[in-house]
Image (cartoon, rainbow, N blue to C red; front, side):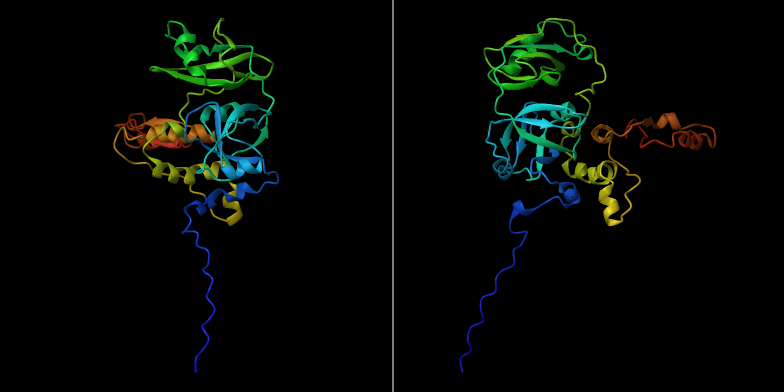
Length: 313
């Protein structure tokens, strides 16, 4: 007696079959947001001050096209203007921006910003840009020819009044501040835009330095940086992740490796990106020939987060 063939079983979807299905679940709780234009800040893959990257599906949902100008709103009522590009490797609920854009918005990695359409940005007639005083010490020559002209040449970069941006030229990096724009507030620097850079350098006030060490300054240790960020950044920036699952965050980490491998650089980058206080102690500052004095010196620095035995962190 012939038996009917059993109905074909439907294959269950496998997350491993689709490489794009991989997701960072450690920060999934941060994606609980009502508005689709509120996105989590992620690290940029390039170092362009004028560009942010979104997933193509996110751009479609926000009705944005490649090359559109967008207004980004961050913390402390800060906003800036950038050009949006599509990036298939960017997760849908995230927006990728470099360190300069993050500083102008007063946000850090993992914070939430809002993205808005800004289609009516006009070409600028005139812009006034001045360097920050402590970044031009020892530099002689014309700053416009050496830094600003190559930076703006046929780039159509948007500028926002009050923003800071970093320009690399040769062996130096110079930080500039947008003093005034015409039209007011923001504009696009076109080939016909007049760029004025006459005047005394601007004294640094309460602006954070844009050339401080960040994650994008550390290279070659991607795996180690991912582990360190999970152990240090998540408890500091997002303690609700640990409270929600009842897990105690780690209290300290030990970095070991040969001199020059980047231990101190990594520690400084984590401190700057998370807003933590960084205190470096060199080994000779603790060691003493007297019994018990080394322990006493170490106890005096009980709040130290990095111990540097040889000048390392």
